[in-house]
Amino acid sequence: METKNWIGGEWITPQGDSAVVKNPSAVHEEVGIVRFSAADHIEEAVRAARAALGTWARLTGAARGEHLYRMAAVLERHADELAKLASREMGKPIAEMRGEVTRGVNLLRYYAAEGVRAIGSVIPSAEASVLQYSKRVPLGVVGVITPWNFPVAIPIWKIAPALICGNTVIWKPAEIASLTATRMAEIFAEAGLPAGVLNLVIGRGGVIGSAMVEEADLQAISFTGSTATGTSIAAACARRNIKYQTEMGGKNAAVVLRDADLDSIVPMVVSGAFRSAGQKCTATSRIIVEKAVLQPFRQRLQAAVAALKVAPALDPAAYLGPVASADQYEKVGAYVALARSEAKVVAQAAVAAADEGYYIAPLVVEGVDAHHPLAQEEIFGPLAVILEAEDFDHAVALCNQTVYGLSASVFTSDLGKAHRFLDEAEVGMVRVNQETAGVEYQAPFGGMKMSSSHTREQGQAALDFYSAVKTCAVKYTL
Ligand code: NAD
Image 1: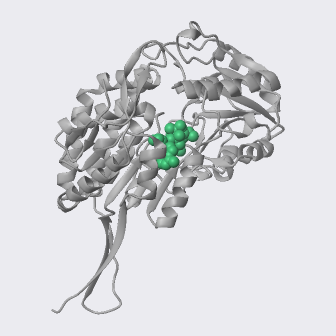
Image 2: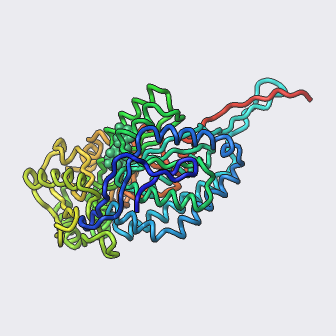
Image 3: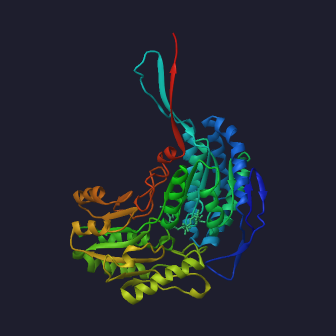
């Protein structure tokens, strides 16, 4: 398979350089070829999206909703094949990948239904014979820049609300999720989405991404990815006064209090840290444990981590697969080396046939202080650090001692402490007796501090981003 651009309903093969995609689970296996676009493909895509805008925006919400329902139906038909392609391209275990495609189908249906939801409000005028009301209007052409770690769900949770609000879209996926993106565009073409409503441009962040951000005639950009890229995108959009949304990195904590039911919570802590090989923005990267239960918690964690099955992504029994790419392998590997030299190993799993792919053995360490890079930097791999807390207040202080503010969990059976944590954790998504990952699609998703531009995705919140509010006043005579 090779990547292609989908612009104005036409399939176009970029003539720039290309790269062979190797399966991260078995690096000798070629999955396909990514062909990178030159910046002028963005101009073409903007022309196509603008040409399609008027007709799409004038459709009723119900009619746009019908298109989204068809996209959901065709995606569901191809779910298994798409999940397998994504697993082979970026290494997420097939069971998780199937769940991700299902989330994509559900998101399309959720936003399809938004086409007929009552929106806006009537605001009584101070003048006689004036009808004053507000309503949502589309922004125009919206740019969507996505990461590789949720190659299906993240694009859909941006594209679906953008489309239902009446915008047309230009989508640039991550370099290492471009085969999956091409197949998704084929699926949406099969669903009969009109030409130019969604345009896919495959390319490098520094070329296509920056052309979108710096020059393209777009009315908004929604980005998910690293904090370094996101903050530079935010600055560029602010300069151009384009609406923007940046969902970025995390350093999420699972806080284990002395009254937690250790037997039931350890699997949740492990899942938060190691599903998707720790490559979720909401993955648990710090485990903050009250001193009183550190020893029994450690013992249970050791057994649970040692039992994890690290296997090729297409193995249905894989708990985690490889990390996604050679870059990830190198970057996470450097943190593992740091952990092995400067911290103490608490728990680890074994990896068979590590030379076949980018496998990194799950690892939990302790013995570094809260300022250490292992406790401060986003690792984005299967490595978590334990920090010991004296008591509840200390645990909350440690949880908040980071520039990030995406997600946090507390494990406790004390309702009072749970509520204090819900109030005091400086994060956008805070959970009690649940892992840090797994926020549902119908709820707002996003972070505080350096994790987000403080807007929210998914749920009803996404509609606020992808539309502008217009205030209308009509004077009439009776
Ligand atoms: P990344 O920032 O390297 O890339 C993300 C996207 O931005 C890619 O499509 C990339 O090509 C593009 N890009 C890169 N440079 C660009 C530039 N100068 N201008 C415009 N676009 C550019 O991130 P990644 O490695 O793909 O993803 C991992 C990161 O994403 C992690 O930090 C993770 O925490 C974060 N993430 C956040 C969320 C969230 O909702 N908060 C969700 C998933 C992932």
